[in-house]
Every structure is written in structure tokens, then in C-alpha cells.
Amino acid sequence: NQIVVSSGANLETTAARLNAGPGDLVLQQMEIPAAEIWAGIDHAAAMGARVILNAAPFQPIPPDQLAKLDVLIVNEVEAAMLAADIGLDPAHPRRACAQVRDRFDITVVLTLGGQGALAFAPDATPRPVPCPSGPSIRSARGTPSSAPSWRPWRRSRAWPIACAGAASRAA
Image: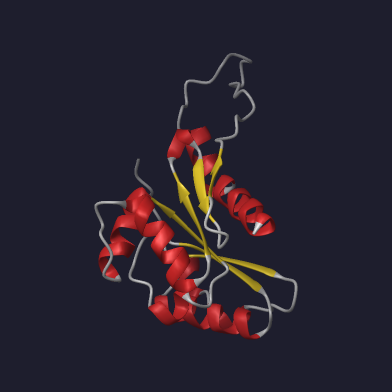
């Protein structure tokens, strides 16, 4: 699986454009400059918004920023990279997610591709989240599409958000 990003608009995104308030849900990915991600988290948290960070593409996350999150979304590779950055065992991503949850009192959603996800909510019980089945994809001719990449892309963008929302509501 490869993701290609054209950074044009992402490099123009600034935290100053964020208008968050109490009851809002702010979702960020790691595709904008790191300083803007951290400023956005600071602003959203200070304004009483709930903050979700999808740690893709991965880059180190300062511990003080982890502490301001409500939900962190990682895949197994990102979980291992985060674990190594903050002194946890990268060989055990699930254990690392539970430790991050405990250390920072946040919900961690570990995505597992077609196997769904695990939501590590602050109540200490990992919750399995099944992978949703999407609608059948049909080509313009009405036949099943041979483009298998559509569903993984759809899951990678919308599905973790739904998982994080479900996990944060259950917490």
C-alpha cells in the first residue's frame, strides 16, 4: 500500500484558519507542516474542542501534544514508530497502544486493514471494531470493477474517523 501526497495546498494550511469551539470535533492528519499541526491541537484543545489526530504519514509526536488529544489513530507501523519515539517496545504495537492510552489518558484506535480496528479507550478494555463492508463497485459498463484499490482508500479516509468517533462516544 502506498500513498502519494501532493503537498501544494497542505503546505498552505495554517492553524490560524482553524475556527474551533466547545463541542466541535477537530480531525488532523500529519500532512501539513508539523508546527501547524501542533498549533492546531493547542488551539482546538484550548477552545474546548475534541481533537483527533490521524498519525499518517507518521512523524514524531511531542508528548505534550499527545496529552492534548482525545483520540489518536495509528496503523501497526505507525504504532511501532510512535512506540520507538517515546521509549516503548516497537515490537508490540498493540501493547504500545494500550501504554499510550494509559500514559496520556487518550483513546487510541489501531487500524488493522481488512481485519478492522482495535479501540483502546481509557476504560482499559480494547474494543474490536469490525471492518465495514462497502457498496459494490461497478464500472461505467455496469460490471464489477477491477479496481481493488477503491475500498482500501475509502476505508483509509472515512473508516478510521468513524472508528474514532465510535470509540470516543463509548469512552
